[in-house]
Image (cartoon, rainbow, N blue to C red; front, side, top):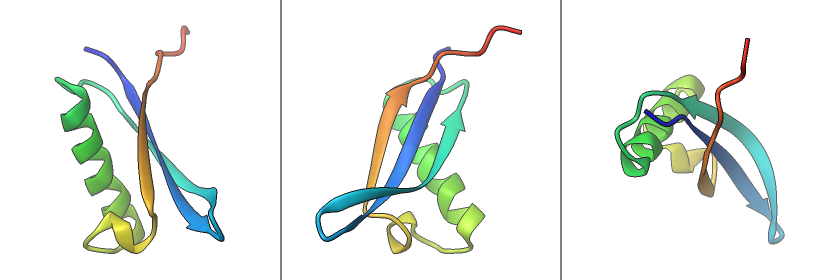
Length: 67
């Protein structure tokens, strides 16, 4: 199953600033990965909705690191 990395950003004066990211492994599809990342991000920051801390969530495939 593919791995994903979701970057969360806050826009200030039209410029996006990264406020965090979440890596998701074992997601069936990109939509599920995005939803899981949104939930993890919100829980990690102690809020009920991720949009309280970020304006955008960008999903990208993420390759596993070779050990």
